Length: 441
Ligand code: NAP
Image (tube, rainbow, N blue to C red):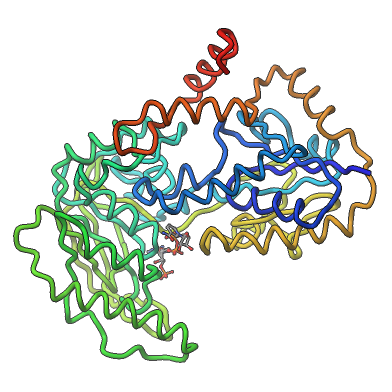
């Protein structure tokens, strides 16, 4: 008795949910649905273009998509082409793997000025995400300020500081590499409201900053503590200590001769974006750390800059038929269960934290719930869904269509680069149509 499962979102959490259903041996047909014609969510659109090793996980996802019981429906937007309520009427189980596509806004005076960007849009821009490819960020000043002390801030800083040669083996779009390499930005500031011991950078990623070809990491040695105060597990202390040692090695480096500098500035809480219509500077309030939290001291300082990028976390957008915990910014759920036949995995379930494999347990939990909750098929599944899409005139993209795009991207890559991404939905659909018309796809 085959049940029908729809998974909305094809990033890591969506694929791990599908993998868990398959591994558990649940008799089901799985339909993976994505707004974009391209699968893999943040692996394609979020993981930095120079971190191709991280993107290799796609091979596992391709194996999942190739299973005979699994279909991909790209270019189908839940909430626009089909509502969540409609999906629930077609499928025995609907799994939301919708991530957190929006920036947590920088709630500051001047936050709406030209030249202020959120990480979701800035990272989307340099990763060729169709929604952000026209962002055309202002990068016309010597200084860029990045707010936040997480790995996303580090990604942004690194991509802005690498040389053209260092980016040659990446899939960064031409428009982004030209804008970055043509920019006068030579001093990138990363601001953390707490100290180096509280920064959320993972150590491998932090150490990478010390190996850049033409960029010096800059840290005030006075900012680096000898010890880490407070209660914490041994593991946590060890991990934090590694970052402290890395910062200490940065402070000892000689920046002479490097064209760019990446400045780590701690205990600095953003207070106001300065300037008339566009960003001209950032005002920061110095902080002290009390009980692990940043507390403003009432002392302010300004830094002139032409761009501010807030990498301070993500949030969900509203989606009709999905209950949101406004305070935590996640889908209200009980261990992944949302309502009868409705489940959630990934960031939408637990918030924007963790690495790619952190999504696996979410998939396992939801597959276990589905095995218990849904014992027989009651809904039309794929046939009803496709009928609905046809009636709405939605031109969906299959996994074979995606492979056709994939092959074209790989074929168009410059030497050494993994692919030249399509950054435009219409161009992708046009390519598929042409392939179908001339029999090549
Ligand atoms: P994150 O690790 O949670 O870091 C967010 C940063 O923003 C923190 O430093 C936080 O400071 C700061 N922040 C939040 N609100 C702020 C405010 N109002 N003013 C100033 N600072 C503020 O999040 P992320 O960098 O977006 O990364 C999301 C997840 O993806 C993380 O788990 C990350 O490790 C993962 N990721 C991994 C990689 C990789 O492995 N290479 C790459 C990218 C992302 P406080 O700590 O003081 O709150």
